[in-house]
Length: 89
Image (cartoon, rainbow, N blue to C red; front, side, top):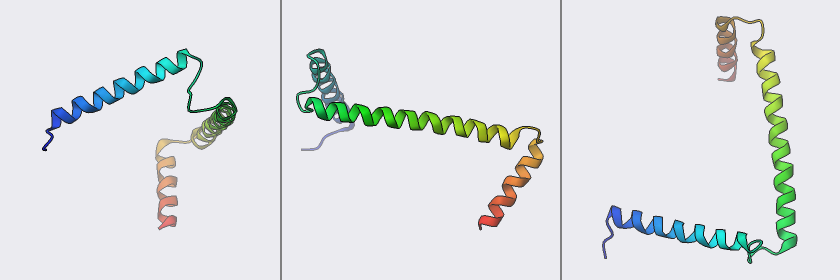
């Protein structure tokens, strides 16, 4: 049986809609039946740790960008970046 593009699109949309409805139903009931409470708690703790780490890294990048760009002309900065690229090769 040959499936055309639009048939595949309709099937994918239907599966996605079905999955979203099921997930909404389980969230309304207080959680997913597949994940017991301790597993969800560990998962949530890990997510929290990762979110804090990502936020810390974003702040570091902001500081490094300020250090790299403050008081420098664009041409000087571009030349320095190019010299670093040449050293790498």
